[in-house]
Image (cartoon, rainbow, N blue to C red; front, side, top):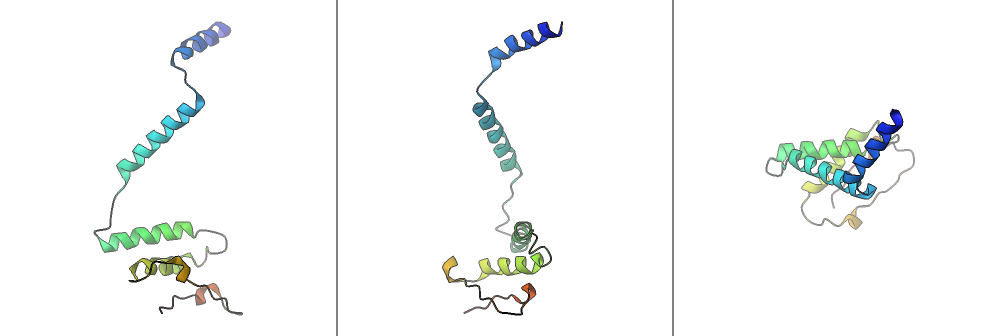
Length: 110
């Protein structure tokens, strides 16, 4: 009885079956469409935009090393888009000092 049911399902499935990659592509498209329905653009409201940037930065900085200071570094990261002028990432330098802690990090304009 069970074998007959499996054979029936197999024959029925052959009519509707497709390659595995096609299924993955369909699932990816479905997920993308679901995300596009939920996305919000907060560029017009500076407070919401900064709040979104802080959330993204804190999520990104949730590692073992920065977990204690992720709010401090998220604030530093959110200051950068507000600075007018060059957006060249090559102009950002990290200077290490002996004996300092991560909390001593700061953004020096100039």
